[in-house]
Image: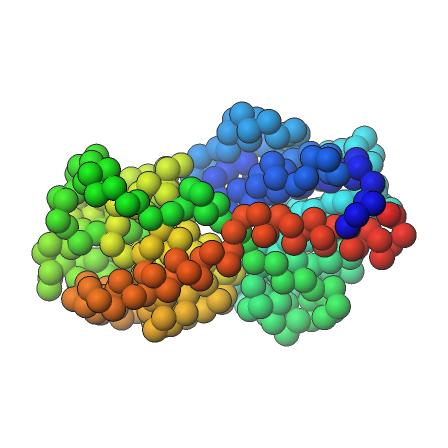
Length: 394
């Protein structure tokens, strides 16, 4: 990319400033794209959910942030009309060379507002498709039709996993040559094993955990996709067999109240810690021995790689792109979704077999090194420049 001009204007567009994968990835790009070549603006919606807001954190990091008050993740026709006007105004004002959307709402809005930036390279980052197993067939059909239409407005569809690409093509969304698989990256300086046992013991005391407990950590949005109630059921089954195991569930979301009720009604308060939303996820993972999720669907599963980078073996479900993040039998164990007992048995298998768990933890750490944030950012930079050159804009 020698000789590439400076001042390539890039707009990262995401529908919310809530704590979540899409917003964090957009922030990572806004912060780490080469400032000698790229001028980046991060535009976010005006809402944050129970997971917490990343807006002030983005500003502290020196990111140039624009807030579009009407933009929100869920369909709201009246607000969406205002959001469309706000996106159009922003495009005309910034005149970006590259517009990079994250998530379904901004993907559709930019397709409608494309006339406001006719020359720009348009890239849709697919963190997951709008249709999923918990939705109705009618809703899924509407989303698929809308996504097929929206795809025509884009130069590139970035899939976070091969599974996402396959599903999109199977549903007639986009053409094969539109897709580019770029798996997300993690900060390997932050997500790393904790070698100091004294610090580990202190962290466990902070969480109210015994130094010698076997600790299972789950980091998730408490929402139907992640099936947190399945995780609570699995914990209940495990604790009937091994009372020394403790669970730490990190996250917030719409199911937070129901999760707390389930923990209380099953009498698990002493064994299951609910931390709520936290921004020190790496520290919490460092307190654990094992990582587990019960997801009903996944685009990729960055949480698995973050846990693996810390050195934890992982237990997950065979859905979506999870098999690209967790190698079954090598870096962890995968079980069918919707089966808390299978998750419980997998947890017990590794808790009862320390040598196997250690081997999986080492293998997972080695795998995680392939997914560094710097590699991810360089891949995105190369995609921008390659697409701009193809369109004669460099």
